[in-house]
Length: 439
Ligand code: PLP
Image 1 (cartoon, rainbow, N blue to C red):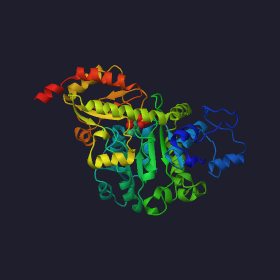
Image 2: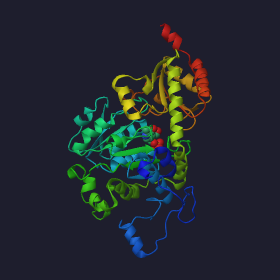
Image 3: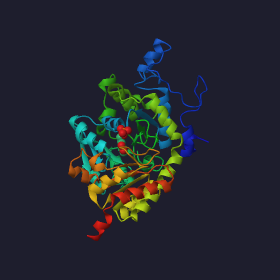
Image 4: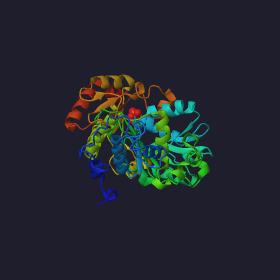
């Protein structure tokens, strides 16, 4: 059976690693080393010249990290991956790899707050303009495109809105123009397959479901190997013009013998080399460990979240439940098309009692942790308006779907009865719904 034909459950346990070549270790060892002995000066020169691939220095590559990269590339259906120190580093590198000062990227407005800050401020300060557009109409991406647009960017299942992004529609707009679609698939690993729908690059915060146990920050960029970077060379100068940072190399030409991996090789050999957001091998090990059970965990997250959404709908304190199961029309069609009926582990809801009820609800939780994270095996809750999205202006909060009474749940793997019992007592404490309903 070829790796291609294997199912995610199998790839998650086997892809990219069999046993340690020197010891036979089945578990991927933590190669806690900074550097690697070169067999000869010729070998060292070849490694630096990219004539041979191999280990040089852990900032640029490490065997533990390599196993993680291969596993995620296989799981995602891509050709290669780059593991990084965080999801933020993955999002930043994914764009910086293509866009330079004076260039622009068209991005969905529906983004994680940290990505929004990165795009609206830090990348802007670096001269990269991010043009935010409403993904409800995919044509907004075409309208915002000009000759200096280097990429489109979006999240598959963006929280807090949980409105699934039209991946195929936007990828199809970009491809004839030479503009790749980069998808942050953090909230929907295994469930959504962005490459199958035309995305060119996938990024992850591995901190979330991939690691799955709330113990390690990490990020990954996956190259789909499915985008023709050379078709319109003037559209992608970073990959088609000589790069002075590597002896004037033209990445699309130089990397050809290795396969369709110009994008990811450039990211490693220039951005990771220069900016240094390397993941620690220890974190890579823990994330690999998490991926072993990813498929099982995702199914349980999905089932528990669906049960929570169905429960919240019935509560009088809750004004609105945000979960794909509660959507209709085109939003629901997109959720069904891209998530295949598995709507993820996140549930949002608005308390009728607004900000004050939100505060009481969060403070009353006993089982749910009140933390700024998602995708942990444990159930988590947060009030985005005062935390994750607090650095956004009120207007930008509204654009990204955050209202005063909005609470976000990342539903964990506990028994559903215990999850619902905790929500029940916290909603009773939050109150406010009946009074509002009677107004
Ligand atoms: N992308 C999404 C969708 C996220 O939710 C997050 C973090 O919450 C990130 C990216 C950033 O990842 P990290 O915290 O690993 O830097």
